[in-house]
Each structure stands twice: as C-alpha cells, then as structure tokens.
Length: 117
Image (cartoon, rainbow, N blue to C red; front, side, top):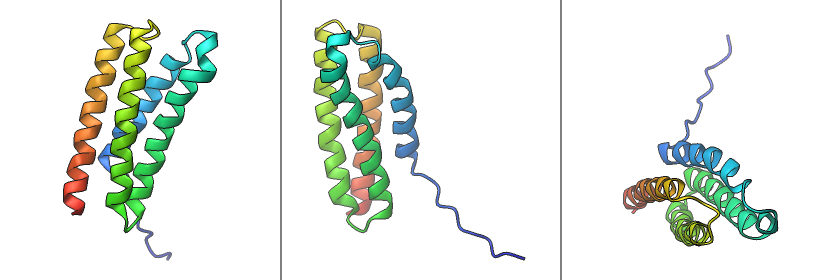
C-alpha cells in the first residue's frame, strides 16, 4: 500500500483571485483592438502576476515580501481598470464588481500579511 501523499490546498485568496481572473479575461478581450496590445495586455499580465505571487507566497519563507508585492500590483490594477472605465472600455456595473473583488482580495492579502508577521 502506498503512503498517503499530503496535498497542499490553495489558500482561499488564491482561489478567489483565480475566479476573478477567469471572470476578467473575457472582459478585457472585449477591449477595442487598438487597446488589446496596450491596456488589455497590461491588465492581463498584472492579473497573472498577482496569481503567481500569491502562489509563491504560499510556498515561500519570505511570504511577507511576496504579499507586499501583491498589494502593490492590486493598486496598479485598480488604477488601470479605473482608466479603462473612464475611457469607456469597462461599463460601470463591471467596474463596480471589479472594485468589490479587488477590495475583498486586498483584505484577504492584508489578513495574510498580519498572520505572517
């Protein structure tokens, strides 16, 4: 009989951000063609960077360092999505949803930072 392997479950904030990325990518793919390679790509890259940094934080002894980078990236993401709304690429309802999701993810990251201190 094989020994049981311990499966590391993902932190709730990683699952939350993963679901947010799944929701967000189709939205940014609807940006005008001239913005898909500028603003849309930048937003998508930051979304994926945050996912990668959260995963790195889960496995690293330098968790706080990674989580502070996540906080910075979330702030950049907030500004880029706000710019997208102001330029008319994201409607107000979607913008409101993004703000609520980023606030919740940010609070979860903040709690993780406090727990890591």
